[in-house]
Image 1 (cartoon, helix red, strand yellow):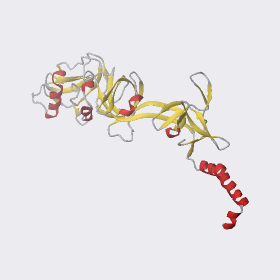
Image 2 (tube, one colour):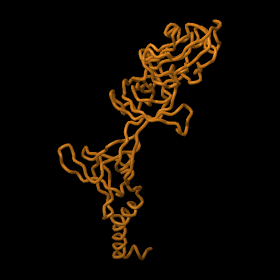
Image 3 (cartoon, one colour):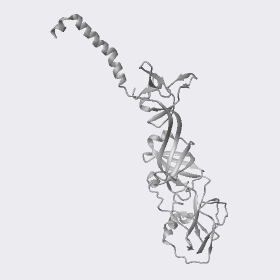
Length: 331
């Protein structure tokens, strides 16, 4: 050690080697350890999985007389105004069935008492009722809060088909399918995804159908947006056919706001330089160069960007990321 200290030439050589390592070796070694990933082409779908609540214009018809039923129309059929849905033959006592007491009390004067059992409006025939028909309507749905909707259940549904009918029994329901509504609540942080009049693709499945085997797709438009109970309430209007819309009250929804194809980037890799969004792409030299990007869609975690090149606001062509580029995860 003493000999090294006494030898200035050797000390100079050691200093040069250390300086070389600092300038060239260490940066390359640390660069090799940087976290990167390869960009690939794919699809990014932005959506919310939520409970949905069906709101409809629907009227429950009550029997004006008792007797034995004879139904003409199948469940789920679309009929015209004035169509005879059923008829009652013979007579029966006026003792109310306990199963229908809640429906009578809930619907009350909002129901229609009929002796000829003809529909007073065009619509879908249903032989099911749950008592919400008068309680929850398109006119008052915005007055209901989050807690009210969360308390809605499908288990109040009652089958109205029976052989013997007593006077004042509910016997059928007519549901207007020219336009109906879905109410749902999404996270408040997702509010910016939606705007009034926006068209949405919606997948509906039965509440409790976890694998979505019986799911159906419809399209609806955002009719209203508001903040409520720490969430964003959406009211979606549609005239699409859903096989269970006349009977279901609570369903599972997949509300899709964006379905885009392009290069998929993790949002953690996106940064800004001189006011432009971009990522750092590895060059052939091993260095990383800032490359501008154009975001097509994002779900908050990942983004779809335009591949190869895009045109900026001034009409200039900008070279951007390409398939299989290697970029820094956290620049």
